[in-house]
Image 1 (cartoon, one colour):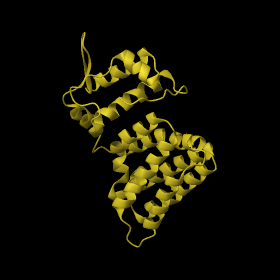
Image 2 (cartoon, helix red, strand yellow):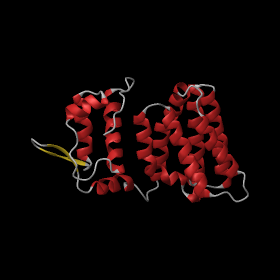
Image 3 (cartoon, one colour):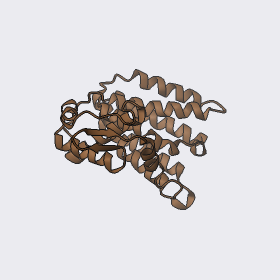
Image 4 (spheres, helix red, strand yellow):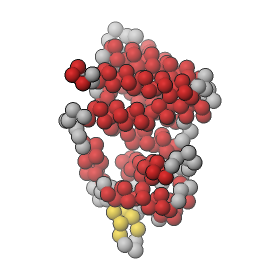
Length: 238
C-alpha cells in the first residue's frame, strides 16, 4: 500500500473510515489483488501513522462488508471475489427514489471540505485547474457540446481539487467514490442549463482557490452541489 500522511485533525471514527476507504480504493484498483495478504496491523499503523486500534477497527469494517477475511495466526487477506462486495455496496438502494439523494448527500459531505483545504493549501498554484475550467467553458459554449467530454472535464476538475488539498487520503477517497457519484453525471441530467451553471460555479470555486479563501471555496462548492441536486430532483421531490 502507498504511504499516506496522518491527518491530526481527524477524530478516531473519521480515521477509521478514511483508512478503510483508502484500502477499499487499492482493492478496487487492483493494487491489492484477490487473495493477497495485507501487511500486518503494526505495519499498516506505522505506514499510515495511525494507532493499531484504528487499523483494527478499519479492517473489521472491511471484513464486515466482505472485502477482506482473517486467517487466525496468518493475517488478513483480500477476499477472492471482492467485486461482489463492491457490487453489493454500489447497488444498495439502486432503483429506489432515495438513491440519488444518497449520492448527493455523499458529495455534500466530502467535496466542500476538499475545496476549502485546496484553497488554503494550494497557495494559488492552480494552473491545471484553470486549464480544465477553460476547456469546459469552451466546450459548454458550443451549440452542441459533447456530454462525454464535459463529464470527463467535470471529473477532472473535482479530482484536481482533491489533489490540491495535499491529502492523499482525500484524493483516494474521491477517486473511490466516483463510481457512486456517476449517477449525478448521467446524460439525463446534463442539460445545457446544468452544464453552463456548473461552469459558472466551477469558476467561483477557482476564484476562491486563487484568493486562498477557504470559506469562500467551501461555500461555492456547497452551493454548486445544491444546484446540481436541484437539477437531478424530480418535480415532486422539490
